[in-house]
Length: 68
Image (tube, rainbow, N blue to C red):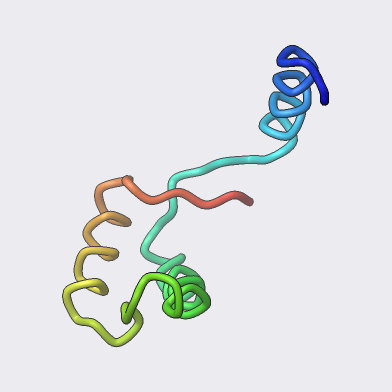
């Protein structure tokens, strides 16, 4: 089993290799597609107006992120 320091080095290497940015309203359809992929785990979202409204609000307020 790897030690904690080795695990931390590996995690930090992954984190520095991605570019996390605030999502924008242009990312809405991608977020909806992602929600569709996990509905079987978390329940209906894609066609739920309250989910769609909350997602748009999160996108406008900078509370949603994308890895680009």
